[in-house]
Length: 458
Image 1 (tube, rainbow, N blue to C red):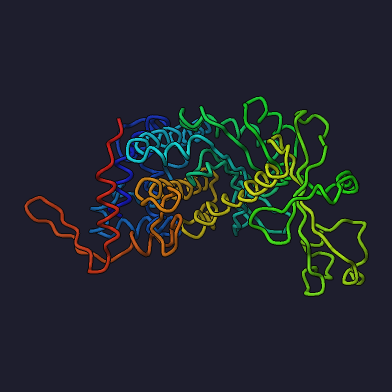
Image 2 (cartoon, rainbow, N blue to C red; image 1 turned 180 degrees about the vertical axis):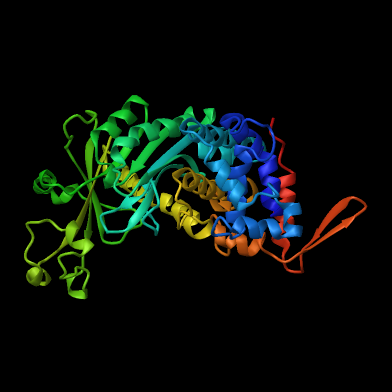
């Protein structure tokens, strides 16, 4: 955990979280709110999957010397989490915003071009993920449409840095659309001042197809692209799109893009409809005969029956996006569609929080403890995001080259295998600690050297 602890200290994470959260108990002793969340995040980064993993983590004598928050046990963590109030959970986002501002200041000092790239154009992704739980007595969860008892984290991320700006823990029956405008406002408040001064764009899938979110984005000066549900009024619009209006999509085979005039009621007047169609090879089984198949829903309802599709000249699957971005030409429309297609970056954050950290379950019957567990996992994902931005080496086009076996940002599981959970000898001599990893593990030395070369935060 040496590299994680060095980064936590360099960014002042605990101090900034404590300043925002404030005291969570009357006596000023023991662990603070910031130490609780950072301790949970570090334990999950080390591979602990349950609250009792804090006890195993605490029992590692040598590991506790390197831990950012030594001595935190499971019962203490659960008790502290239950002391948080709603205002203090909101203050966690303020603390994360201050951490992001500190990290961006450091990035500006060591890699100004990289800092300019992540702050000049900011993308906010909104999405939810379901976390299945077991036990009839767990509170704050509910059955979703698939019959699973789930909690539903509702998260806003900063796509360029793969970090979290704001989040709520909802139940499986909660619709994210009524909460989305408020979540967007809190995400904007969490952006550093340098990022708020640039261009800000919002991406969301068809689960957010509602005019309230579009109007909130308009009033906040944020450009938006939101997936549209395949409702009945959209299909007749295809008849008005000429064949010459379609242009090839970027980096997607057999896909084309077109723009149509469509603005739902009570949406911003500049809203346009961006349409993507993908040619499907029916003879090779691209369209299933099962009426429940997901791809069947992308077909025009007026197409031939499934047993006659193989004789058709062309069969297309359609996706619709409502946006106020500039789609005045075919090239710009293709660029917007290509950018919107990468909204799946938020899925990488969820995958990292679930498979790298431990958001794949919620460990307690108390909603406050589960909220703390969620924030521990999301903070772990954000730590991995800032570790990538601050210590990765420049690659092609100036983009940072990560610490994984491939280019790009390393996932938490890769960092754990190559950086965090490696065997080493911890030697104390003359009041000095020396960490000696085995031969062939140079990554730790490289990352520690880069972290220690970063300027300290004020």
